[in-house]
Image (cartoon, rainbow, N blue to C red):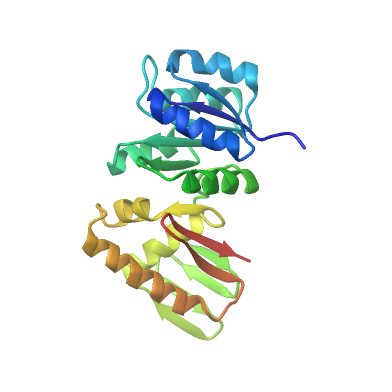
Length: 229
């Protein structure tokens, strides 16, 4: 069985060495580059299974590289690594073709889980909801009315409950970072907002428990995965 080939782009030499050796010790083949200007040609030659790109790179940043890689290969998964924490950077990362986004410092376990998750699932970004109603298992979710319907039972959701469920559904069967949820829905990842998120996740689990095919799974230290069906 051939090894999974990772194109890893990182200009911090010490960090890069640690990550490369850690991935190789777990059976991955790693092609590493430190200069953004050399990455596109390296991608063409190496044909990796997945790309792990630092955002801040010399000569060409990770977002630009993702655009170039996407023009060559639409389906290859891309993970961004960055110390940036602003919401607009998360949005820009996904807009430029990224499938996932990890903030530094990160654990190798987190990186490996995210690589495996992307390679198991269909490599695509958030699946935007079309129209005002979606079906998830036994439930009908009416976005415009913030209503969750199961047969004769209707539950009116608060605005934030509705937005959280929408975000989880759009990223269904993928891991979504807890901090991304907080920044996108609350504007920051403060302790107070983090506790609020815990409350909303518990509420949504309670609402959805009537259908065992729907599950919001906690990925410890990372975020959540909404399994549908």
